[in-house]
Image (cartoon, rainbow, N blue to C red; front, side, top):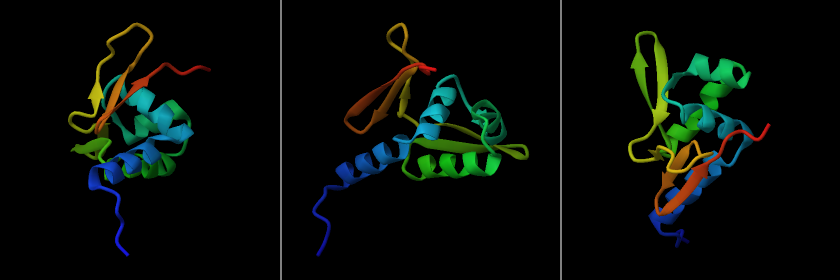
Length: 109
């Protein structure tokens, strides 16, 4: 039996699952300030590079992030159209996932 879920809904669900994880939320907050290398993200979140690389690739696979080679490193940023700069004080920006908008707030810790 085929999946009756429309493709845009499936893509949105995949993106929401990808961002709904504690470490990935921290990574998203860090990337809201601008593109970063895998190593720099690992430093900022205090997690080994291999683990951060896995999380970044997962978010890239579902279209939340994009990457580019910079010399011998890989730099990650938001995919085109996914991130919008903050519109209000206290906000880091907005994730645009299909028809959904998610405000990125500062870390509460």
